[in-house]
Amino acid sequence: MSFFRVDRRIFLLSTVLFSGYSQSQTATPAPVTQQAPASNGVTQAAVQQGVLNCASRINQVTNFLGFTPQAGALLMIPPAQPDQRVIPMVMEVTTDSGSAYISANFAPNQANGCGASYDAVAYWPHKCEAVANKQFAGMKNIGTLKRDITVLDGGNATKVFLMPAGSGCVSIKKEVVL
Image 1 (tube, rainbow, N blue to C red):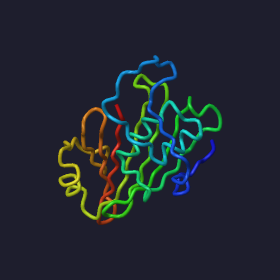
Image 2 (image 1 turned 45 degrees about the vertical axis):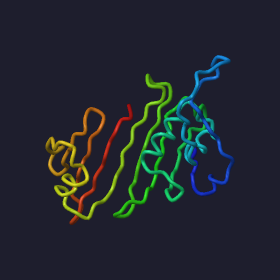
Image 3 (image 1 turned 180 degrees about the vertical axis):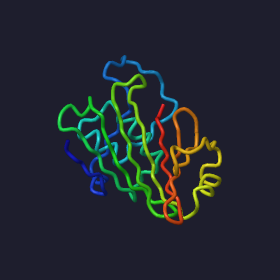
Image 4 (image 1 turned 90 degrees about the horizontal axis):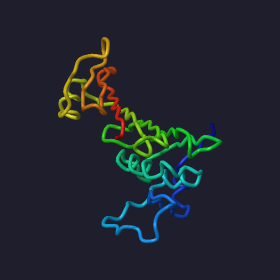
């Protein structure tokens, strides 16, 4: 597996837009009522490396997770058939309390086109109970994983795990993108 680093140099490359439609479109496509967002640097880098099946999902997820030119990202593009294999990606995004580590995976050729999931890890300088009440107020506490890690339920596709860390708390939000 080769590594491909996305950084500010990528933004100097020509813009690659991917609208997400197949090559077998008819001559008169349906009118577009809403313009798709421009591809960000992570998406552009993926497309340049041959990842087309998941380009629109990569753009959707990385934008949702806060990718900007101030963030860092690392794509792990497979050396062969990158458009047919899982694409792992890691991002560092600046937060109010430092940086968050985000790990995402994109899987082409799924029932929804391109499957995706991510884990967003952040440190909070507060106790886990306070983090649960303030940062994840809409989620239900469903107990502990075993002994120390609290599990918050955000529905079938979203869980948050809160782990004590010194005087603070580490949150790990895991979500499957449906």
